[in-house]
Structures are given as structure tokens and as C-alpha cells.
Amino acid sequence: MSTESKTDPRSPARPFWLSGPFAPVTNEVTAHELPVEGELPRGLDGTYVRNGPNPKDGFSPHWWFGDGMVHGIHLAGGKARWYRNRYVRTARFTGTVLDREQRLRGGGTSNTHVIEHAGRILSMVEAALPMHLDRELSTVGVFDFGGAVDTPMTAHPKRCPSTGELHFFGYQVVRPYLTYYIADAGGQVISKREIEVEGPCYLHDFAITERYALFFDSPARMIRDWGAGMPFEWSDSHQSRIGVVPRAGGEVRWFDVESGQLCHTANAFERAGTIVLEAIRSARFEAAPPHLYRWEIDLESGRTRERRLDDRLVEFPRIDERRTGRPHRYTYVVEMLDFVDGAPTSSLLRRYDAETGTSLAQDLGPGQLPGECVFVPKSAQSLEDDGWLLSFVRDSERDVSELIVLDAGHFGAAPVARVRLPQRVPFGFHGSWVPEAD
Image (tube, rainbow, N blue to C red):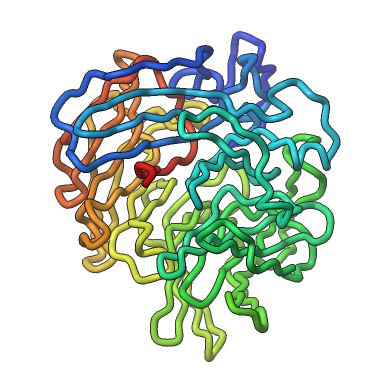
């Protein structure tokens, strides 16, 4: 939805990503034993960590280009034990002037997502390799899977719940344009495969099913490297396609779909010879409203069907990740209600129910601006909605931020707990729940 600002960010007319709920914070803070309203569930033991752009000097030419800052809150024993926010210490953050190879291995801005895999917390941006963080969110250094990954890494890897494997890819302006990787549950890369495409394009996210990986070849063509600013240009003549790649190897098949841009995927799965993909789609790369869509690909006939699931403007879809690659019932999104200068100033959480075809709002009240929510199951065996939803929320009237905990089984009801944070958390991108280490 963002477009590059025509306004000098140092001028009084500041772009949205430098003001209001998006404005960067200046301090790295550590606070212990945080105040809680309500009751934090016992058994919710771990750390919620979320990433986002936070330019260290207060200025950035685009929302996507600010230095990465992770915000974490550690919960244990029904208490909010600590909050920390830390810049990701990439080479760019330290002020080093980088060529392309140095930028790849220096972590770029590392401002988009943060996950845990094989005991490591990884901060990610799609233009570079991930950065390894310790359990207190300090930067350890660049992580390249023991030298096995030599391209940028997507900020949206997928963990297969059946195998524990981490599936991810890299795209870049030079060959190989698209590389598909699989790392095992221990973090060792066991598969590396070049996917042949006509040229590089914007590939922010993808999806997996139990047998396939799905890639969206879009008209947003990559025409230069990230170091020179926004590197994409829309081509009305390029056919949008979904690539179906067998996880175990084999022929890649491409299926034409309506022209558009896939933003974030919710999930994909197989059903009776058909692949179903649910994701956020926009008509174009920039400044186009995002909606929730579903594609159905008939593998036998080659026919595709595409439909918009709702007219509401929504983004940041998440599911119970135990359902990744399998049929899911619930999708949680951020619904954007009001806008000023292209940025949401009012939002709520919404849950889509694929079984009933309905949706339900979680309205937190006036001035409440929630970000992406993350589902945490109550146990490994619990049902799909038997868990907790975590989200950072900004109270616009008080200019404070809280972590809210919702009971997913009673979505729409008041939060079971609110944790007051010691400073505002800027509206950012994506996060994860990191369970307590064994």
C-alpha cells in the first residue's frame, strides 16, 4: 500500500512512516516486572518478539527502509517478566558503506520478520541474509546456514508441521533469480534448487502444502538491486502466474491467474486434486487496496479459479501455524478502517471462518490500533481455536502501547490481559512466539 514520498522527510510535512503510530522511538529500553491488567494465562511461557523499521537517525525515504528494531516481551508463570527493544546491529546500522555482496552478508536493514528455528532467533529482511539474535535480543551476527545459503533469504519462511523443516527462498536481480531452500529441523540445509523464471520480480511471500511450494510470479519486475532505492517497476504486459513446485523434486508447473500482486499468504493446502491458496492480493504493486483472496488450482485440468473473500481492506493474515500446508478453518487479519495520507489511523482485528463463510470483528475500542496478531496454542494437542492471540496495540489517546492477550476460542470478547509497556511500540511488520527453551 505504500508509495515513495514526494516530501523530504526532514521537512515539517513528514510522511506517515515517520509520524503518529509509525514514528520511530529513540531509546533501547529494558524494563522488568511489567504492570498487567487482567490475568496472564499460566502456561503462556515464552517471548513474543516483533520486528519493524525504526530508522536510527529518525529519517527514512520509505517505510520499508528503516533500520530493524525488535521488540520483545517475556511472559512466564503468569507474569510479564521483561520488555526489551533492540536495534538489529547490521553492517548498515553501523554506518558501513556496502557493495551488493557486503550488503547481502551484512544483514541489510533486517526489519521485516523474526522467527525461531533450531534454537536460533533469526531477524530477517528479503534483501539480505538473516541476523542471529540471542534470547535477550542482542545481535550475534549474520547467519548463512553454515555457508549453504548464498542468496538473500525471504522474510517469510514456512515451517512444515509434519517434518519440522523450514522452507524458504531467495530472489535477486542477478541469476539465479529464484532459489528454493529446505532446512531440516536441526537447521541444516538439505535441499537447494534454482526455480527457472523469465526474470526477477517482487516475491515477498510464498506458501507450502504437504507436497508443494507455491510461488507468485507477478508484474512487479525487479529492475535493479535494493541498494538504489525501490527496485521494482510494474509491467502491464507480464502475465501473473502461480508456480507449483514439488517439494521432493520434479516438474514445475505454472498456472496463469488474473493480473495482480500477492502480498502476504495465509496458507495453502491440497484438497481432492486441487491446491487452495489463501492470501492478500492487490491489483498493483503500490497504492492498491489489499483484500483477502482465495485461488483454487485444478492440477488435472489446469484451470484456476480466483475470488475475493471480502470487500474489507485487510492485511497481515495469520493462522494457527500447526495448520501450515493443511486445511485451516480460521484466518486472523488486521482490518484497516480509516486512512490519512495512505496510512491506517484506525484498525481492528478480524477472524475469518472458512467453515461457515463468516467473519467476526475484535474491536478494541476508540483510538486502539492493533498490529498483526500471533496464535499460540494452549498445548500441542489443542484444537485450532484453543489458544491465545498476542498483538501489540497502540492507544492513540494516551500515546502508549500494550501487549494484549485474547482467548482465541472467545474471539470478540475483551482481552484476558493487557500488559502496559514502558514506551510506545511503533506500528511495524511481523512477529513470532518463541517458547521457553528446553
